[in-house]
Length: 75
Image (cartoon, rainbow, N blue to C red; front, side):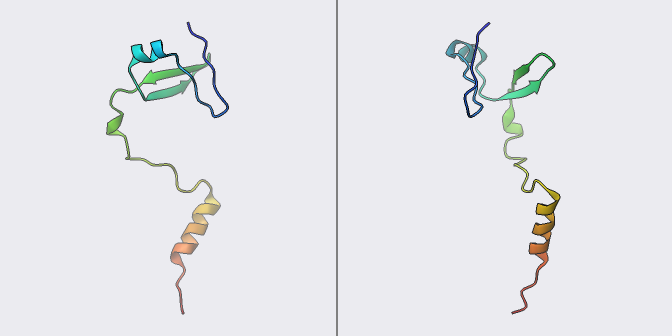
C-alpha cells in the first residue's frame, strides 16, 4: 500500500510504479463509504466530446440567456 498526497489544486500524486502497472490515463472516480475508488476507463474515446460542461448553472442564468436570445433590436 502506498501513501499519496493531494496538492492545493486537488491533484493526486500516484507513484510511477503504480502508473506503469495500471497503464491508464483516465479513471472513473467513485466515492465509497471507506474512501475513494479509481477505476481505469478503457475506451473513453466513445464518450469524448459528446458532453461538455453545463453552460448555465442556475435558473437565473438560463432565464437571462433566454431574455438575451429573444430581445429584438428595433433600431
